[in-house]
Length: 49
Length: 227
View 1 (spheres, one colour):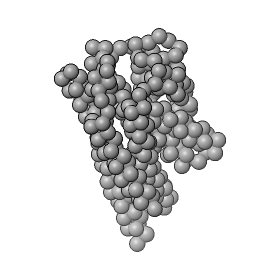
View 2 (view 1 turned 30 degrees about the vertical axis):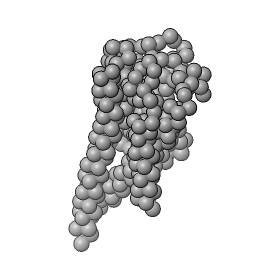
View 3 (view 1 turned 90 degrees about the vertical axis):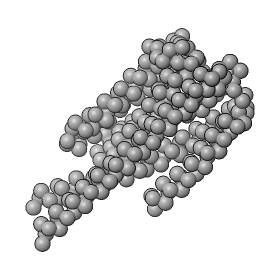
View 4 (view 1 turned 30 degrees about the horizontal axis):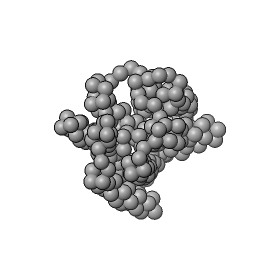
């Protein structure tokens, strides 16, 4: 029964870990996109001057 | 506005999940034959069903792109399919851990598990293809075709436990023709399904915002090159 409970904890941990890792990857991607968007906007502003 | 919706849905989802965890561990007893490990079903089943629904939504968005040639629909399809793949991963991993306890093995090549794994590989391929093709219209067209092809596999995954005698258990819930669960055990399952759907929606909204940023970057670059 102990092993049964341990594997249940593994299952719950794995499910949440996948969600957390995906959310972290989304956050990193969003920050990269924001940086890229700012860079492209700055580049356009400099060209228009 | 979208940020407010995302925050509201996240809070509601968090509250339902917290309540569900309390119910699962404090109120629901261990299952007579499986013991504590049966609680994995509370994540495995909603994650699997959510991924199936998501893959179909993604396919409809892809078909919508093929009809209208609107790249926004391709972005929606990409967002939905990526989030659905994360849910499919949860279903496969939690199923494998359950199998290790109940069957004594991490994996077996039975019809349900193999077809679901093939489905997972098809959508990994879908995301890899998106990265590999630079031209937006070619990418959107090929990805829409792949998602139609992959959606056929979902029917096979869904029906595999009826078409073939497999290691994977047959239908459990009454709505699918199974023996059903005790009411006290089934209610948290549907609450967790609701929480998973909310989480799914939140992740898709975040992902769609990123896709619209990506489109803005692409259009600004095209504008810059036009000088």
